[in-house]
Length: 331
Image (cartoon, rainbow, N blue to C red):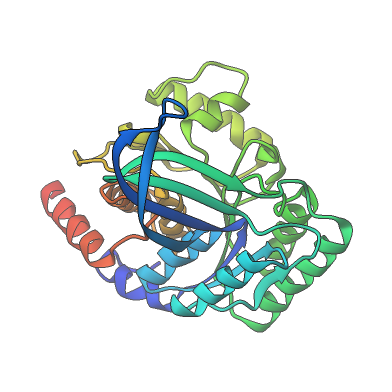
């Protein structure tokens, strides 16, 4: 186990395999000065366009920002947006070795229209059907090659229900991880929520957990403990973290459970907070940190990115400063 005083430095030694739905987050920004005469909607005078790495790629950006080495695995199309996506990777120090380009689907793009930092509209371009057998075989070969060629310390599944993390992909990669004694973490979505059997750490949010368990769930310790127990009986996972939005997060493992409240912050945008939380969680697993410390750090990081507009990675220096201050206060 890495001493808590030095685990920020240890981040640079961690190799993380990130598997999931990759996409472009596209931002069209401008100003609004009038309402359209054609319909009761604002007219945006466009002033800026920006493409950012999104989905599982944003998780990779968070890991890079923390100092780790992420190996990103996902599927894009054979289209102009795929070219844009792959061109963004080297700019952020990421490789495209795990990116499979399929002629059978389009590259996922989420286009957000903003005015004065206000989110007005989102337009999604995507294929969300499951990978075909041909795509699955090719994609799994890409992933296994990376596992064979790199010393992977943790595998992170980032699911957005876009069809990449199918039951077969999930099951085969968890089996690979178990064989190689590699811990696994997942940020699930509803379609394959119960497919992650024997994952090490399972991290849904409160809305997702409420939709999946047979009992009513409230953000209280007793209620969340009941939900976590139900999840662990279904999946056999070692630990559970449930994010609670403005109420913080809940964690449970063999040694106990607790709710970690959020710090008071000025929230500008909640987009990408889940990506940041699962990034911290995966790093903590790789370094064998105590889950209570993982939870505190993940909670701080998720809150931090909510202070900025758009999907953005965590700021390591700010996170370390806030964590140290919190540890001093708790003494």
